[in-house]
Every structure is written in structure tokens, then in C-alpha cells.
Amino acid sequence: MKKALFALALALPGMANAGVLSGTFQTAPGDSGNFLHVEIGPCSSNASLTCGTIVRKYNADGSLDSAYENLGKPIIWDMVDQGNGHWGKGKIWAPDRDKTYNSKMTLNGNKLKVEGCVLIFCRSQTWQMLP
Image 1 (cartoon, one colour):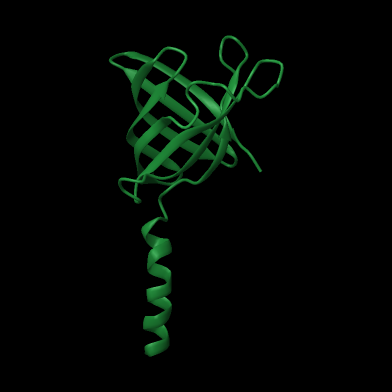
Image 2 (cartoon, rainbow, N blue to C red):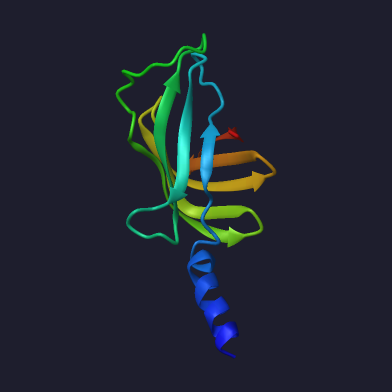
């Protein structure tokens, strides 16, 4: 009995974050060919929600842009696990248009489909999980 309780106590912290997506993802290139790396993990304000922060920006030629003004800024926040690789009820910010959208995400293997809508206007991209 003690062993079972100990095992359950060890498992609980992992279960609390079971619905949080974690990893680094490369965005699809924008109109100019630039792309971002986004670090996704638990939100600092609520560890049961998924958030994402811009950690790197690359120019169309693949060169790193370490002076990018949006490094360290949140791009995804408050995504709720909806089960089976789906998150929703969160927000996503599009730096290229400086617009914030209601968002949902779907993970399929190492591809993350990210969708955002304002009223009836929607955008989507597929991001690639980095190794």
C-alpha cells in the first residue's frame, strides 16, 4: 500500500502537466521568407496551460537575426488542452501584422497546425518541431 501511494505521489506532478505541449517549433516562413523558433511549454502564470515565446528569428537566407525586436516576447498564451493532440481557447500574436487572434492548435506527429481567427478572418500555419 505504501509503495502504491509513493508511486502515485511521484506520478502526480507529471500528470498535472500532461496536457501541456512542450518543445521548440519552427514557424512557417512569412511573406518575406523569415521564420521564427518558438519555445512552447507551461505558462508561468498557470502551469496547466500552454504558452510560447519567440526565442530566435531567421532571415530568408537562413541567417540568424539576433537583433530582432520581438525576441523573448510571448506569441502563444493560455492554450487549454482539449485532448487527443488538440489545444484551444488561447491566443496567438502574429508579429508580422501585430494582431492577436483567438487560437487553437493541433499536433500531428512533429507538425503543429496553428490557427488564429479575428471575427471571420482566419490564418493558419503548420510549424515543425525541432529535434
